[in-house]
Length: 250
Image 1 (cartoon, helix red, strand yellow):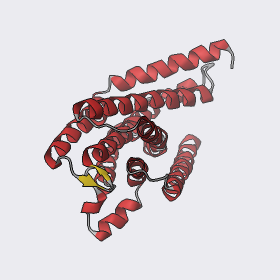
Image 2 (cartoon, rainbow, N blue to C red; image 1 turned 120 degrees about the vertical axis):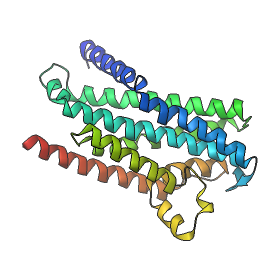
Image 3 (tube, rainbow, N blue to C red; image 1 turned 90 degrees about the vertical axis):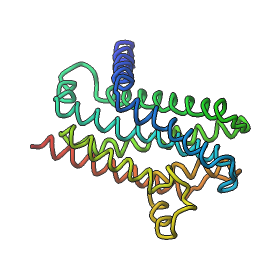
């Protein structure tokens, strides 16, 4: 990679960051709402034990996942759909900027945004709710949510393949809220019926949260959950690639 391409990629990454932080929906759904929900439910339920750990710590991981998914899925899909509808991606093809630089800038910007959300939520939980965890637990939970949360970019890419930003905004929000509730991010899965628990365990939102919940209680990584998340990524990417190729052929 020569210096010119590197500077162009970094500039594109900065542009992605600025566009995201200026997006009101991102600020509301990925920053403000997780914080409000966390303080609301943690204050209501209190210092109870759940799934082998303290509820305040458990719910901190849930709301961190909620914020990460909102940024990686809904915000990303709406931004991608808008770019496609405005012909931004086609315009990039006639510029010296290679396609891989565009992809790297997207992933790099999203990784930084997700890292910010994780650090913000962990600081709020540690300072605001006096959550005291070993450094290794903070790091392992943060790393899991950071890496696992990036998988939802694949779902964002699938929805972003639509060229109607308004439709993407509505549909992605419905799916985002539905998967968050059904996947146990808003309320512990143990409070659900047996049928709802079976539904939750099939969703990627549950699998992302489960990894962090297991680490809180001293458990190991659930490789079955990792496999399910990976399978979702493959399916979403294959379908979105097929749709985009069909659209470009028209």
